[in-house]
Each structure stands twice: as structure tokens, then as C-alpha cells.
Image (cartoon, rainbow, N blue to C red; front, top):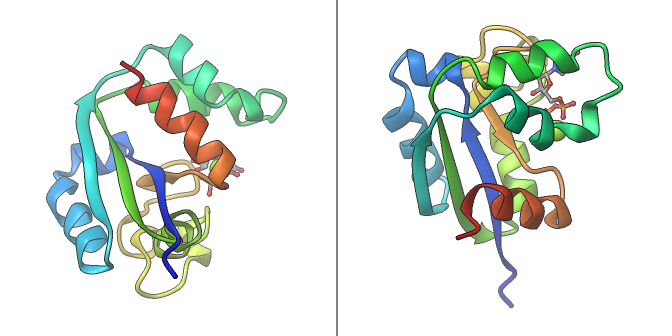
Length: 136
Ligand code: UDP
Ligand code: MG
């Protein structure tokens, strides 16, 4: 039985800035993910606001959108069995201080806002987020 899923991963500005793209991609590949699509882009704040619209009522929304649009990011469509949940596991907790050993955020995250990676939180949102960045 295969349960191949695609999900969206973003390497956030703090990690791109520290040249962690290849190291983070290697972690995905070593954990069984295929990187099907990848592009380095810089987005406008208005696009970040659209992407993170689900958080628009949160106190951190404005800073979050400023941050995601503050520098280059790598957006990736990645694939494996159970990709959505397995990516969330591999990323670790939102706050790097609470992330488990072996997770990307534990290894590279600086703070709750500069936590190095984004990952879709459900299969439904994965489709929406992949479309957001890769719809041709
Ligand atoms: N965030 C923040 N402060 C908070 C909670 C979240 O700056 O108190 C940021 C953080 O960068 C996080 C993003 O908002 O990755 C989206 O929050 P979410 O709860 O969806 O966390 P995630 O799904 O990224 O783990
Ligand atoms: Mg989230």
C-alpha cells in the first residue's frame, strides 16, 4: 500500500541567509523525500499576507508577513509516503526550543519566528499551498 503525498516546504529567510539550502535539502532526501520542484524566490509582503491569511487575527501576523518577505526563500514541492505528517515530524515544533533532537528546527532554528522552515499542516492545505507557489 502506498500513500504517496506531496507537501509544501519553505526554507525561510533566516536559513537561506545562512546558506543552509543544501544541508536542509540533504536532510529531506536522507529521510526519504523526493524534491520534485524547487525554486528560490523573494515574495512581496502582500503575497506573504495572502499565504499566511489563516493567521491574520494573530498578534504575530504582521511581523510574520514582514519576515517571510524580508529575503529570498526556497519553496519546494516534496513527495513521499505520508509526506504531510512526516514533514511536520522532521521539521519539529514551531518553537525550536521545544523541538526534538534530530529535527530541522532543533538543528537550525534561531527563535519561534526565525524557525528556518515552513511545512503544510494538512493534505488539504498542502494542495492549496503547492498551488499558491507552483500554479503555472
Ligand atoms: N509564529 C510566531 N510567533 C508565534 C507563533 C508562530 O512568530 O507565537 C510564526 C512562526 O514562524 C511559525 C509561523 O508563525 O512558523 C506560523 O505559525 P504556525 O502556528 O502555523 O506554526 P508552524 O505551522 O510553522 O509550526
Ligand atoms: Mg502552520
